[in-house]
Image 1 (tube, rainbow, N blue to C red):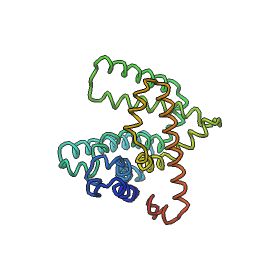
Image 2: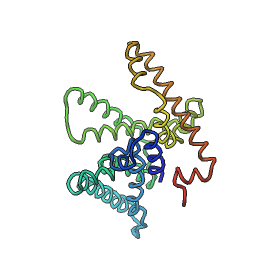
Image 3: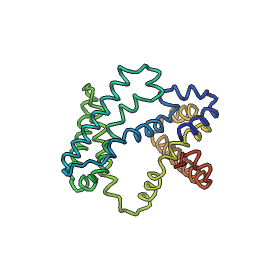
Image 4: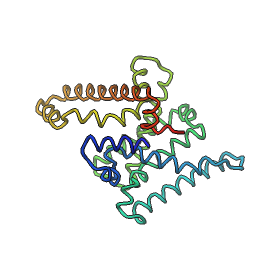
Length: 252
């Protein structure tokens, strides 16, 4: 529902047809909403209660299901369906992001987050692996699964870093927590806010200064301004029960 309502409104603002939005693989930037809805449908078999009592067997079954879904997504997006259908369903994004989504889901399902936090070597290995692979890529290394491995290492490193600060209460932690809890609103509304800014003109001006410090400060200020404005817009819309249902699809 959010993808349709927000996407339709963005089409109106940017003077594009709704069919262009539907048939665009990236959905004018809102592909994540389509993919997330699709992923929740794919979670159905993972929610089934198994009669088996052995945890190892349950984990192996989930791992097999996850791999099976990934293979099916690959076959559908590459060989079975036409390009138009693949774009409408955003199957390329589904195939690329399914491993990370299902990994996060299974970590939470089997309560592995605390176990990961207790094992410092996981952070060390993930961080060192990411740096090593990045340096190897800069030196010309090319392999099909390298981006997947790099992304996994980066996610595990960031997961550990932010997890260790979970109970911290500094100003920085509170603000990061606020942004983290409202990432959906930031994702949804920042496209509309960007329509008010002439990014090409701003980019040319920043490039003309040749000052990376000024560029960094301006980009941080701009990003934070858009993020906080998006949060305010989201909280305002949620004050209306009707708008909350229409925009976020909270009908059930």
